Image (cartoon, rainbow, N blue to C red; front, side, top):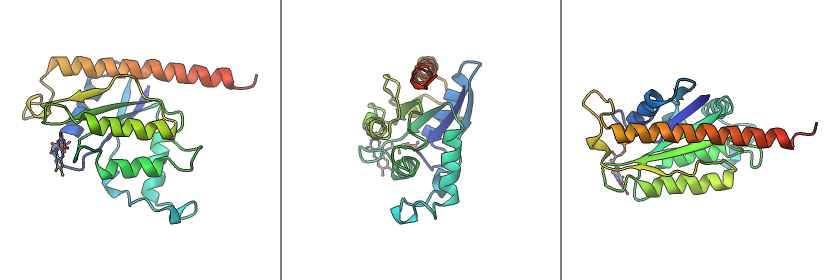
Length: 190
Ligand SMILES: Cc1cc2nc3c(=O)[nH]c(=O)nc-3n(C[C@H](O)[C@H](O)[C@H](O)COP(=O)(O)O)c2cc1C
């Protein structure tokens, strides 16, 4: 199960990135989680560049999404919304409309914040965008509040409950991917 994890924070010591790495460590054996490293280099979405002048950074994002069996998005919350850089990447990846790398790609979304609600609105915003991009998302909404209390100074997750929730989310994502694949096979003409 190849998972592309995208942290929505560009900050060096971001909790979002710590959560993505913790999810990788909490994943069952059959998971291979890769952290996307290029979010900060993706230019602002510009429809004038389509289809012939799409930036290489965007092509790379699309390739990595296409090469993954599923996506794990980990988002902070800025002003009750998802960060611009993450939303921008989703906008690029959503093209071409109806045939994009996001179409039919199973996903799970985690939000986190030092605030008690765990950035739940940011997670919901991405879920809303994915409802339009044709990206199936697991039912569970995982919002990790007080995230700053959950990691040690070494960046490792200390909280067992959060670890269990991350593992359960990934298992749910694997089940969703199985359902999506089965539905695609049934639709294929024999
Ligand atoms: C511009 C800005 C807006 C923010 N707005 C929110 C918010 O609406 N809700 C919230 O829970 N935290 C908010 N925060 C605090 C972030 O949750 C906190 O900085 C968090 O550590 C950022 O995520 P990261 O650690 O992954 O970079 C905001 C922070 C910034 C810089």
